[in-house]
Each structure stands twice: as C-alpha cells, then as structure tokens.
Image (cartoon, rainbow, N blue to C red; front, side, top):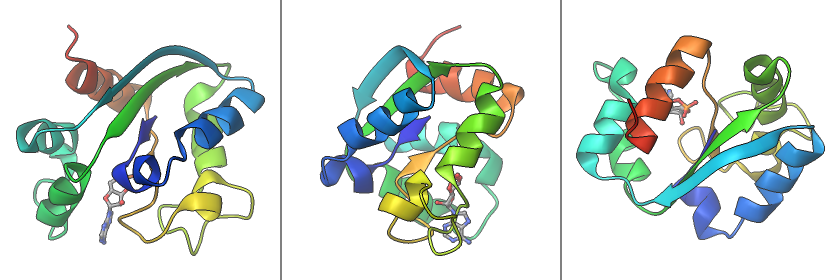
Length: 129
Ligand code: CMP
C-alpha cells in the first residue's frame, strides 16, 4: 500500500495504518519518502500513456508518501476491498477512500492490483532487487 500526499498532509497515516491493522494485516516494512519525478514515473509506468499521467506524477511528488508492505491471507484482494473504489465518491461506506479520499486523484492511498504489480511497485519504491 502507498499512502499518498493528500493523506500525509492531513496527518492521516496513523488512522489508515490502524484500519489496516484492525483488518489483520501485519506491517512488515514501512518507508516514508518524497518521491522524485523519475521515481513517480517509474512507479506509475503502466499509466505513462494516459492523459492524466503528468498530473498524477506532479501530485505524487507534492508531499510525503508512505510505502507499506503488508502481510495477511488473501492480502491483495482484501486490501483492495478495504481501500474501496478509485473515485472516493463511488467508494463503499467505511472504506479508506470513502473515509479520507478527496478526489479521483487525491484518493489517499494506492493498493497493488495484483501479485505482479506488487512485486514491481515494491522494487521501485523500496529500491530492492
Ligand atoms: P491509483 O489506484 O493510485 O492508480 C493510479 C491513479 O491515477 C489512481 O489511483 C487515481 O488516483 C489516478 N487516476 C486514474 N484515473 C484518473 C483520471 N481519469 N483522472 C485523474 N486521476 C486518475
């Protein structure tokens, strides 16, 4: 999971991690950093051709982000469930984006959508092999 600048600016890191822990996730690694443009571009490379790419990259570099490696049974699916829909207006009540998201872009958190993207995103954000 990646906690985005809109959430770190509003001091929501503790609240978000508390929700995640209450759902049975273990926090196995955590790192806070202000992403560089090149890091954000690499992290979201899958969206590089989209018209919202530049604004997404600028926004992701606008403040601190917190990357969190989480463990739990069925982790990817369960995290996506509790994170909610990309657009906070469409996210189910009680989900993280429903509770804290502001707009489509400022939607507080990112959650890997597959094992493959998790492996890629972890390597990019934590700069690991
Ligand atoms: P996330 O799950 O982090 O994955 C990519 C992000 O791009 C997504 O959340 C949104 O915040 C953002 N995004 C996706 N589609 C759009 C769009 N049409 N307009 C603006 N932002 C978008």
